[in-house]
Length: 225
Image (tube, rainbow, N blue to C red; front, side):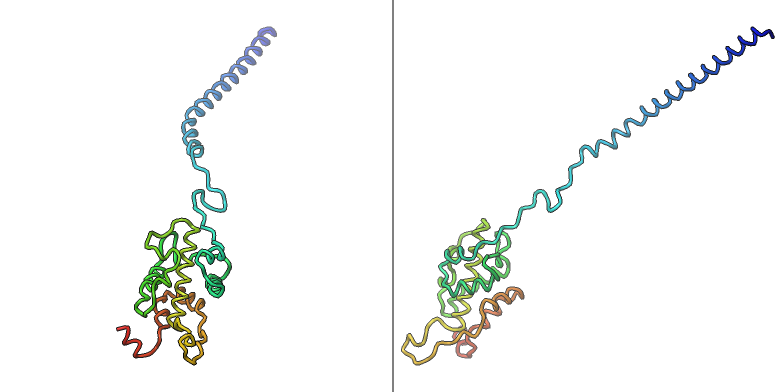
């Protein structure tokens, strides 16, 4: 082989190697495009649910939760019910502070204890007492229970006030004996009625506790029969 032929052969080999590399690069690019095209639907499917997913609620609560009604000031309720200073103090003791957070109502409905207490007040005539003296404020009407949170507090406080009056009159009587010309001292109140009522509510024994305040005399029990 002459020198010229050797140079030609070397040049042809070099171009052959360049051509092979180009073909290999094109084949690799085509393969990559084919793989990308095949995987594209799967990638779109996996991303779509994330795009359509609802965002989580902010920390601190659910998006649509209704806030609990705020307790109402006790003094506003007392004025509406015409409670005396002593009765205001008793309500303050029962509710444990200067606000009325309903104890006898759940939302806009009476609890079982609340219904039991209302029935007791309605049945005060059995003991010779006037139900109207204890069905005060919104209890005086037989309408539906209030739906507004502020009105619920007034209804709840009316039940409590009626219960405290009923407990006092049932146990101590309504009449000062001296007003009848009798030389007798009036009874000293021996019970903390607000605490007693609160404990009865916690134990779900409202009717039992209230009935225990009636005079414990056999003759009195016969009058009830």
